[in-house]
Amino acid sequence: METKRTEEQEQKEQKANDKKFKKGLKKSLNLMAKARDEYYNAYCYTGRLGDGTIIMDKLQEINTLFNASISVISRQLRIEIPIGEMEPLDDIGDLFTIEEFVSSVECGGFIDYDGYGYYATATEQSKSVIYPSDVRADMYKKEATHVKWYNR
Image (cartoon, rainbow, N blue to C red; front, side, top):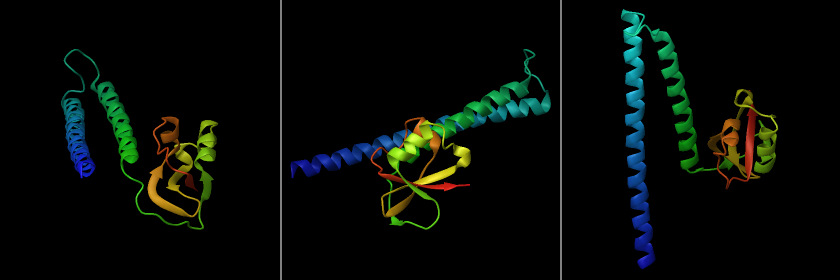
């Protein structure tokens, strides 16, 4: 009985941490979006900051940071979300073991532009997406056994 209560406490703690993470994430993204919008509005009215710096350069810099942040956050969320329900393999795409897929990505055989994959087993596939950049960032589900790959 003691173990069950501890598991419940851990689950509650995990949910609370997830909620804090999401709240902080939302706040950070909102601040970045606000900064981007302020620079854009300033550019529309003046074309320059008070110190003579061209606003468009700042706007591009903020957009680059914003997009990079979204990419990292998206990857992190893909790792944290469970693989979920599985369905039978379809006839489209190629099935790789996770080792084959990782090896192919590491040697440059797959890049994000080429397509995407779903985590899978030898007989089933999920709707949980994996991209080659996830492997390069070492942010993929290590417990997966296979990847069902779809070229563009």
